[in-house]
Amino acid sequence: MVHTGAVMSGLINFESLEKELRGAVQSEERYQRENTAKLRAVEQRVGSYEDFRSLVLASHLKPLHRHELQGAPRRQPWNPIAAGTGTRDVETRETSSYSQDQTDSDQTQNKVGLNQD
Image (cartoon, rainbow, N blue to C red; front, side):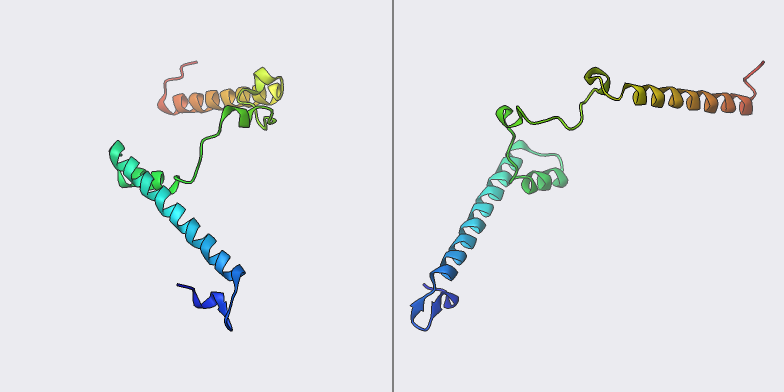
């Protein structure tokens, strides 16, 4: 069966036919991928519909392999102190956070009457 958009005045429009075929193949691949994810989710006995749905929606994602990550520049190190960058900023934030917590604690104790000077 030839789609009506693929036939032009007795000639076959191969571009349109190829586009239609690509769309059908992509649709079939998506159906198979999502169906496999659904079966896997049911087999795993996921706890809720949200978990099931997230597994199906993420079925197009593929895990990264180690060789794909090697050589790529790190944008943000997990530990800026170990990397030797940003140590001053980290220390400043920690000390200011500590002094704010201490001030809040002192104010709370004064309200309750526990701070006996």
